[in-house]
Picture 1 (cartoon, rainbow, N blue to C red):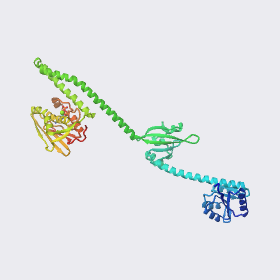
Picture 2: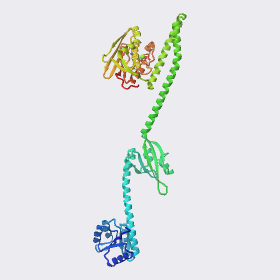
Picture 3: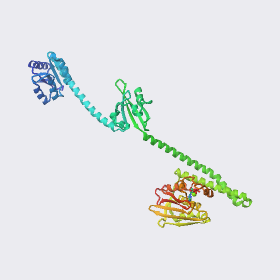
Picture 4: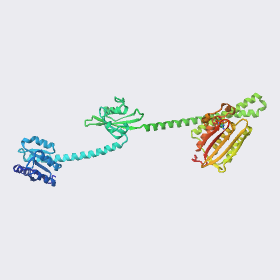
Length: 506
Ligand SMILES: Nc1ncnc2c1ncn2[C@@H]1O[C@H](COP(=O)(O)OP(=O)(O)OP(=O)(O)O)[C@@H](O)[C@H]1O
Ligand SMILES: [Mg+2]
C-alpha cells in the first residue's frame, strides 16, 4: 500500500468542491491517484470494478440525497472505506453517517490538504482494523461453536456458575446428569440441582473457589444415591477478581462401588486365608496330641488286655471311639476349609471306573455285610475310564456309599451303584433302600454340619461334613451333585463329572 499510490474515488457533483479536493491531494504529493465521478450511479459502477482504496462521497448528488446515498454505496461496497462530505449545517448527519458505516466525515469549507490526507489515512487504517477484527470474531465464533460441540460430547457435567450460584451455561453432560434440558438448567441455583436444597450447600466447592480464587474439589451424594466428584475452576477478569466458576461434575458411583467390592473381596480373601492358615495350624496342633491319645489307647486295648477289668475296657473303648471321631472331624474341617480357600490341588489321571469302585468298596464291604446289606453294581460298558483326581474321586464315592450303608434299614437292605456315560459327562448314582429323607429336609443336604435325624446320627456318629465336602470336591472338578429321596423308602445320590477333565489345575 505504501509503495503504490492510494486510489481515491471522489463522488462529487459540485465542480468547485471537486477541484478543491484535487488540489489538496496534489499538494499532498504523488501518493494519491484520484478518479472523479459526479453521480451515485456512476460511483457504484466504478466501485463494482474494484481496485479502489477509499471513496470520498458527497451526500447531495443529482441522483441521491442524504444518508440514502451512503446506504446505497455501502451496500455495494462494504469493504472500501468511505468518507462523507457534509455542509456545515449537517454535522449531525456526519455523525449518523459514521454510525451507518462511514469511516469519517469532513465538513465542506473546513477542509485543507493536511486534514484531508490525515482523514484518508485514518479511514483506511480504521477500515483495515475493523476488517481484521471482524475476521477474528468470525474465527472465534467458529472456534467456539466447535468448542461447544466438543464440550457436549464430554460425559462429565460442565456448568458455568455466577457469583450468586446460578447456572449461566451448561453442557449436555450436565443436562443428562440432572435429567433436564440444557435450557431449563440455565438460571437455576446449583445447590437446588445437586442437593434439592433451597440454601447453598454447607461445603460448596463453587463458593470456595469464589472466595479463595483457587480450584476446589468435593465429593457429594445426590438424593438418588449417586456419588459425584465436583471440581471447580475459577475464571478471573483483568483485575484478578473471580467473575465466574466452572464446575466439572463426574459421576463416580460405579467407580466407588467397584472399589468397595474390590476392597471387600480383598478383605474376604485375606479373612479366608487367615481362617485356613489358622485351621491348618490348629489341626496340626490338635492332631499331634490326639494321635498320642489314640495310639496309647490302642496300646492299652491290645497289649494290656489282661490287666484291665471290664469297666477299664469300656473306658478305653470310649476314649478310642471319641478320639477317632475327633480325628475325623479335624480332618474334615481342614478339608472343607482348604476347598473353600481354593487350596486343593487336583491331580488328574486316567482312572478305571470299575477299579475305583472296587477299591472304595474294600473299605465298606465288611460293614455292609455285617448289616445284611446287598451291594449291586451296574456299570455302563461305554464308561471304562474317567480323567479325574483319584484320591478326591474315592473320597466322594466313599462318602456317598458309606452314607448309603449307614442310613439303610437296620434289618438289611440294598444298595445299587450305577454308572452311565452321558455325552461328555460321567454319571455316578448310589441308591439305597434306607430311611430316606423328608421333603422338608432336602434343602439342608450338602450344607456343613447338617445332620437330619438326631436319633440315627447319634447311633452312627459322623461329623455332618461328608456331603458338604463331596459337593465341594465335585464342583472343584466341574461337576454337579444332587439327591432324590422318598422318606422311609430310600435315597439316590448322583454326581456327574466330565469324562475328560475340563481345566487341568496342574
Ligand atoms: N443315603 C442317605 N439316606 C438318608 N439320609 C442321608 C443319606 N445320606 C446323608 N443323609 C443325611 O444327611 C446328613 C448329612 O450327611 P453327611 O454325609 O454330610 O454327614 P454324616 O454322614 O452325618 O457325617 P460324616 O459323613 O461326616 O461322617 C446325614 O446326617 C443324614 O441325616
Ligand atoms: Mg457321611
